[in-house]
Amino acid sequence: MKNITKYALAAALVLPSVFSIGAKEAKADSVVINKEVADAVNVRSSAEEKDNVIGLINDENRSYEILGKANGFFKIDFEGREAFVGTPWFNVTKETEVLAPSNFRKEDNLSSEIIKVVAEGSKVEVLGEGQNGYVKVKFEGQEGYIYNNLLRSFKEKKQEAKKEAPAQQAPQTQSQQTYEEPSYDYYEETTYYEEPADAYYEEEVSYQGDSNWAKEWIAQRESGGSYTAYNPAGGYYGRYQLNPSLVSYGASPAEQEAAADAYVAQRYGSWENAQAFWANNGWY
Image 1 (tube, one colour):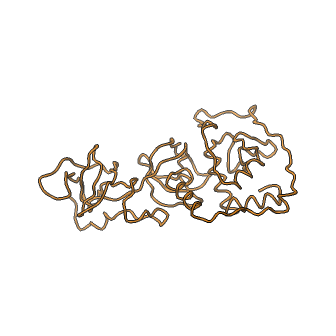
Image 2 (image 1 turned 90 degrees about the vertical axis):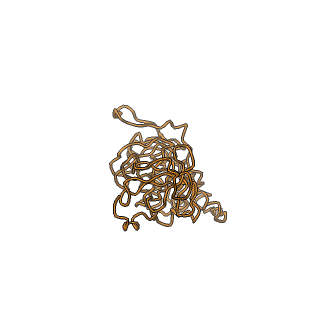
Image 3 (image 1 turned 45 degrees about the vertical axis):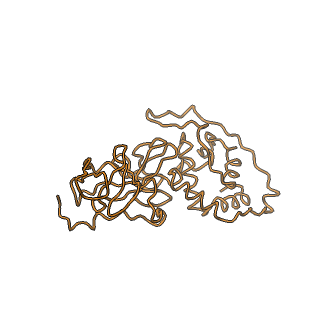
């Protein structure tokens, strides 16, 4: 066993306040062995040190769901049964579920290399906040970034914040009352596009877009709500007709949603502000 004076290294993983869940352990919290202080830890049938060892934990890549905490022990789910391990030997991690097929990127920006596409329903370990709305996570032993709207805990946090905020109806501007929507001919160009062998597509019918009224308002005027709308004049593609540098041709609905949210957050601060600008200028 390694030097026990390293106990301080076994403190629970501290994340920014956006990840805080209060004193009570959430169901999604898990523990992993801290190899800095112990190579292996006994698993016990009760929260006390006696002749009650029922197993051993030594794999730093395996996590165990926290069921409770008492008397210096974590109560965990160990191979389908309740068991106990000493708190000094473990780090607390926070996991969340991926809501839709998501790009797992090396860096926290849209131009970063994609490590892989993480399947819907996968669990990832939250490590911290990144830039541009991305969250740093660990998946299958690799660290990278996924956009926050595609992670359950962050999506639910935003929805709860919206419920708590007082309902506000956007005022009707003169531009909204008199503006006549221009007509565009949208079509999907396929003649010059060669699909990469490893391209990934999500079925459009399976994706549920954001319920934000301003976001939907813009989507309907930009593309009629279509994820495959294409404007060859500028190479603009998808539901929000974003610049090719933000969304490439053939981007999945999930990627389009993430890119649109990131763009609007950086340029306007909110979809409501973007909608007001569009109403006055005919573009955003």
